[in-house]
Length: 311
Image (tube, helix red, strand yellow):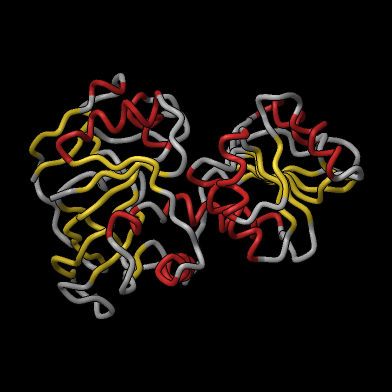
């Protein structure tokens, strides 16, 4: 089968579309005929080895972790899925940008609802489930205020919507060109990260500080900058890494890798299918242009998700 592959840790232009052995479904697994796959920032780090100390990979690496398609075969013991079922899946660290991929039955695999096309479905799993887990980890509640830093990215677009659906007051980082977009996602206020200090701009809107900061951009000590937007005793949550204690009773919560609960992916897919969750595809590429998709994803500001369609 054809797949987008990194044969070793390499530069982003070192990936190739080439032939690799087609996988087979083992016990508790399904083989998915891929119709679409989406890229995530972690894919770039896995290709280059930038995070090999935390996320080592085996080579050849089939790039991608978000896929949508139909079940081609089921492994031993699988009863919840049958060949032909439309599905959406998180494949783990690899395997999505290919003609076929294998996924274990569990919270990372869900049936794709009618009305949810494969490209839109592929744009959901990693980003949507990460956003879900971030808000769950910090216990965001109705009536609280939250600043989302990185609101126009893949995770950010879901974090804004899910926070708003919980009844929180959302302030999102966005340039003037993106302000209407994030308001359309559910943000009540915006701050222009190019126009000055994000924390200071936020405090002008919420003088006592927000209850929660979801920072999808900064890591390490740089998180102290956005933590200044929090009230005393507030919470900062990030998928990256940083201090546990910022002073003033402000705490840091970090999820280096998300832990999805049963039903999370089904819920996101259902919301997308019936219009409660907006899926923003900033760019779509055919499989033949998968290398270009990786290059553009790394080098351009693309609002939302980058999706690769697979014939």
